[in-house]
Image 1 (cartoon, rainbow, N blue to C red):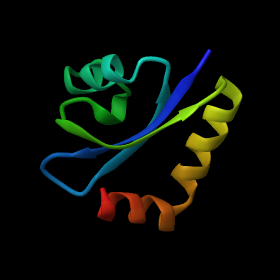
Image 2: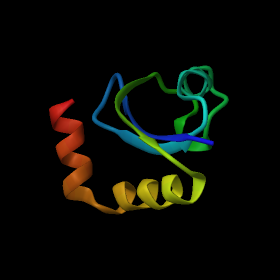
Image 3: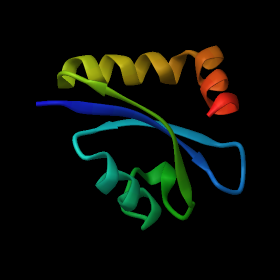
Image 4: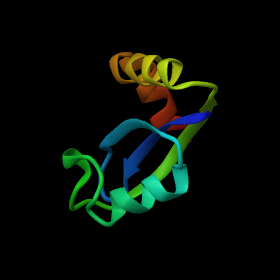
Length: 80
């Protein structure tokens, strides 16, 4: 089964969120309808980055890498 690692940016600020999912389109809709992670509720998000990952363990690992690597996160935020 394949997964996506993604980064969202809040439309009204510079706040970002990183996550992973099997269904990217549905997950973004859930975030924007207040059904996503607690941190994302009540905000409007746009997708700024995604990558296809071959399995769940690698997706979780990549998600954590992006979350912890501020330079990479800022690069993605400022260039997409």
